[in-house]
Length: 169
Image (cartoon, rainbow, N blue to C red; front, side):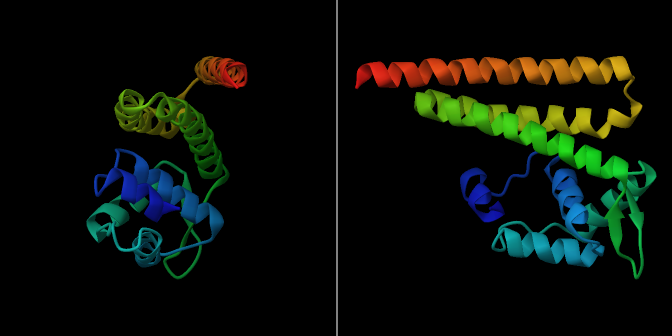
């Protein structure tokens, strides 16, 4: 999973990835900062070695933001708000993955566009997801409508591509 992704993007970590990754881990089970670091190294086959200087301050920010809480023995777990943020990030990931798949089918130009898109969307998605608690209901609804409209466009494009493929056969 993570190792395959690293083989494609190298050692550069898009902005917001670490936050998304940590929230996903803590949603699965309570972990300490050390366990998070060890898991990241394991999941990436040693290609990503997050430092304590990255993980521990991030845990502090996640605590301050109310996305995690300390359970026992220095372990942390997601709050309901943290789980919602993780779910929103997962939804965004699925949208990006669908768009990436379409662009990769276009060829080399699509491939370069896709990698650029990953970086940009990761940064935007992280910023939006980390601020969901501060958004008004109207802003959340507008964000949701945007994402749904983009999904509809993607589905429409996939249908067109499928029809073209069938017509060519």
